[in-house]
Image 1 (cartoon, rainbow, N blue to C red):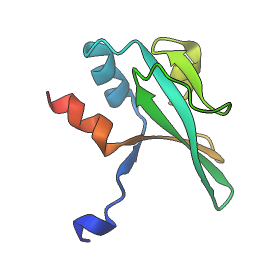
Image 2: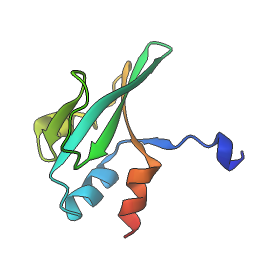
Image 3: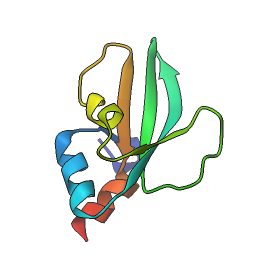
Length: 90
């Protein structure tokens, strides 16, 4: 698979959450990304302070709502873009 075909998103998981916490991320913005085959994808954006639409929400990183995002769901997926993963290497 070439780089142009690579999916830039990966599922949110405890490792990403833990790394964000160690980098002092305070909140996570949840933004509806797309709907495909009956599945709604939500993008998680660390330390975003601006809401751009009514469908976006900010959650404290330690909130129960964020911790619930680890629980697999059939019709909802929480994903993180590679650009927010690059920060994990700093």
